[in-house]
Length: 277
Image (cartoon, rainbow, N blue to C red; front, side, top):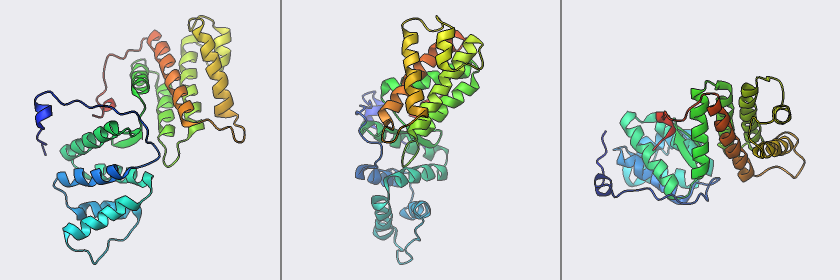
């Protein structure tokens, strides 16, 4: 299915105006209604969507509803409007699984645009919903993945991916997991560049001065201290917040990119799955 472009897109006037992210642990009413709108625009019926919402929510379809409009549509609307916020995102993922190639591309593009223009801190990548940060965060994470891939640092790449997965967990992100995995990424790259396969990041900064230019190495040491405290040795009532974990992921990604480039990595090639819209 080829979706016809709108006037603004055909004539180069269209641009996505990104709104500050203010929504994470929520699925606003507007999003719930927009899902139905986009799905129906793909020439799908309310009964098709009811099959999906019923399965995700584990609700039996109402056998008394036969007509697509208004009965089944009203039933689907009730499902979407009244379910827990995180189940809305589950429904989005199942919809994607049920669509064909062209339909999938259109649906993902529309939903991602909605996220960006409405300040929702999620995005669809590789047909799954994961956390989305501001422009600086997104640039840091996308770049480090490409650099680590080209430098063949697969373990470090896996660790930063796991950090993102932890931030993306629903209904509650795994904050300590994200901090631990982001540290592990930086530690892996630091071990590779020094050749010291056993030392911790804090030890590496002391044993190999100059690996990271001073005084930036002091910042890394402080990050290590923060991560050790917040990510590994939590105290009751002192758990780190999401924004703190996001900051650690962003900073460790940037430093890992620097070290990865020193090991021959590059960010020049753009992987097609890293820009979902």
